[in-house]
Amino acid sequence: MYNEEGNIEEVVTSAVAVLSEIADEYEVIVVDDGGRDRTGEIADRLAAANPRVRVVHHASNQGYGAALRSGFAAATQPLVAFVDGDNQFDLGELPVLLRAIDGVDIVSGYRIRRRDPVLRRLNSFLYNQACRLLFRIPIRDVNCAFKVYRRQVLDGMLPRLRSTGALINVEMLARSRKMGVRVREVGVHHYPRETGRQTGGNPAVIVRAFRELLELWRELW
Image 1 (tube, rainbow, N blue to C red):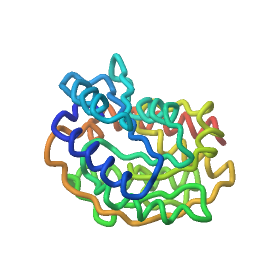
Image 2: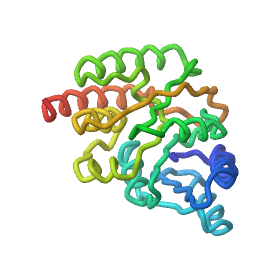
Image 3: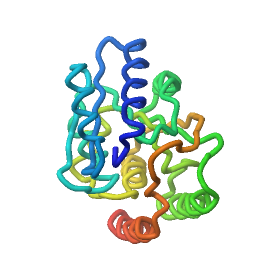
Image 4: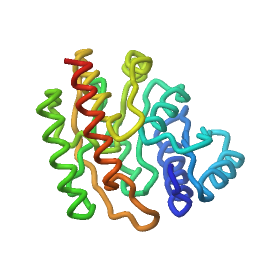
């Protein structure tokens, strides 16, 4: 979550509702990535009302990759699912991803129809093509922020993860491929953002992502 005061309550409430129906043991971890609005305050209130909800606070904005890494480090369950806090995915589809984990190590969602502005969709298309070419990642939607990983896969790569920004999904999939893990793709629905502001289309974020992409390629190849 980064400045998601308009979305956090619905996202966390949905996560709790879905997980309580399908699992006896579960946790919801909210990473407040140093936003300037009431996201952290609301997250703490939700956690105080439900012991299944835990909050990780960043004192300053560290980036998407750093937020995911903090969440992974805090997670304790054998399956770890993650999703953006912007309410653009239906958490009611989480059981579909969990059913697909049988026989594989990662379930990667792909957006059946991406509901983002045209320029962001174009940037994403070019980025996906670059990632597939450079790292031989056989995933159609590398940056889809709705995935499930087995805990042991994360444990194997977490000490080596270094991406703090948007490259994190690429790094995780590239390292997973080199580890020889099994991946399955599942289509998920994507919805327009109704509140808050997107940061993924920021030119500085895009430039940083491509720079990190080349640095990662040099490291892994």
